[in-house]
Structures are given as C-alpha cells and as structure tokens.
Image (cartoon, rainbow, N blue to C red; front, side, top):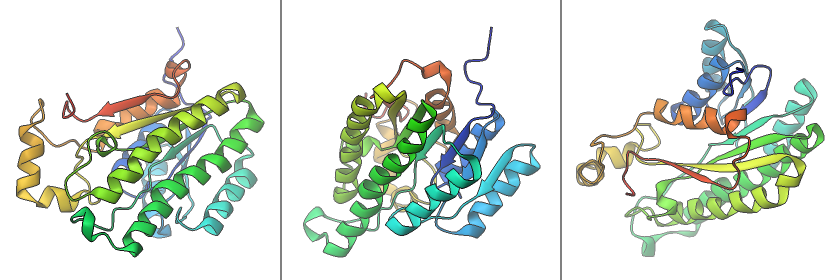
Length: 253
C-alpha cells in the first residue's frame, strides 16, 4: 500500500519558517520528500533552516519575504513560479502580534500592522499561491490560525480578531477553490513554546492558567504541529477541506 503521507516531489512553501512552528513544519515536509521553500522576513534565518534541511539530506531553498509587504509578496510567488513552475502546498504561518494589552488601549499602528500581516498577508498569499496551484490542477493551502480564533486570549484582542478572520477565510477559499482541485484547511495551535509566544509564556499567571486548564498539563512544542501539517499537505487528507484542526492539548475541551 502506498504511503498516504508521502510528499516526495511536491513543492511546499512555508512562511514564517525561520524558527518555531514554521521551521518544524518545513523540516517535517522535507523529511517526507517535499521540495521546501523556507520563507521569512530575514534571509539569514531562512538560509540557516534551509541549510539544516539540506545537511539532513533534504531539498530546500531560502526565499526571504515580509508577507505584510505586497510588493515583496508578489515577488516571492514570481520567484517560486520561475524556479519550480508550480506550487503544491502553501503554509501560511508568518504572523505578528505587536500589541499585548487591554483591547481599549489598542493603537492604530498596532491594529494596522496586525491586520496587514495576519489577514491581508494570508489572503493574498493564498490568492497568489492558489493561482499557481490552479494551473497544476491541485494543491493544499494550510492556514496556521490559533485557539484564540475560538476563545479570544486575554490582552490579545486584535490578534484574536485576525485569527478569527483566518477561519472564515479558510472556508471561503475551500468553497471557491475546491472545484479547482485546491483544498484549504486551518490548524489552530494552543500555546506553543516559541519566541513568538514568549510574552505569554513569561507571564506566570497566564502560563499557569493555560497549563492548569489543559488536560495534558503542558505547553506545546513546535514539533507537535508537524504531524497535523503533514496530514493536511498529503493525500491522507485528500477529502478534507474547509476544516479546522485544533492542536492544543485539549485546552478548548
């Protein structure tokens, strides 16, 4: 029986892949045989992850991009098309959360930055990536959302709002792109031990609240997301679209 989780030969672009969740997903894809494009804001960070993948026997290249910059985003997908002529998997993982505080004190700058990356960036990456997938007749778009999309986190108002938008975006792309052979699903991580979540993890009260209300009684690790991402990229999920896969240790139960 063929390995349904095999990604051999598939071209996969992972944003926010220079560390944390994105790095874990990029490495997992490479281990399953995918040709991985490691993308994030800083080229040196991308190159370090790509080099580690290649050293382990995988196939990876580094392509820096700030997904909140439309010109940079357009150039990224043009480079993918020029190099590979196709795209099979897109993981929208790059995100930002510049403001941690009461929702009534949110300033316009933090609001706009969060929206530009977490909503506009995801949306147009999916548009540009989806066009490449449409030309190939198939593809998988995977949006990294958050449990905050279901239960807004304290002092994380605008971030939670944008992640809620990502869920409806996932359904919109799933519905409209399904006839093109393109699937779109979302992964909703709980609290994961990354630099991105450093503010929450360093807040002892918030940390204890999360762990105490988590049936598995622990914070997640980036590798905990890798299996879910491989599943949604592979033929094992060929009849799955428009769905939300929660990976939170049971926090939302």
